[in-house]
Image 1 (cartoon, helix red, strand yellow):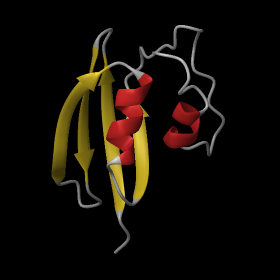
Image 2 (image 1 turned 90 degrees about the horizontal axis):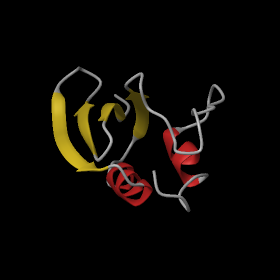
Image 3 (image 1 turned 180 degrees about the horizontal axis):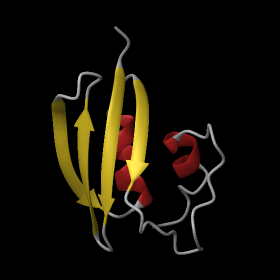
Image 4 (image 1 turned 30 degrees about the vertical axis):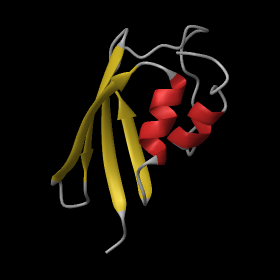
Length: 86
């Protein structure tokens, strides 16, 4: 069995609630952290395996809507913006 984790992020102005499920759908972790690039990167960096991430529908970067190409990983997306606070 591969090590795939599915991550749901509920993004608010000052905080993010996260839930991590394993491949069988079992909840393996929950967390709440600040809506800052460093906090998001720290959270994702603490997880191993292949990560599948979904955001709620209202997420926006201060610079505008997220433009995400299919196949771009969450880590690549966040790393490209890590120098800016969310």
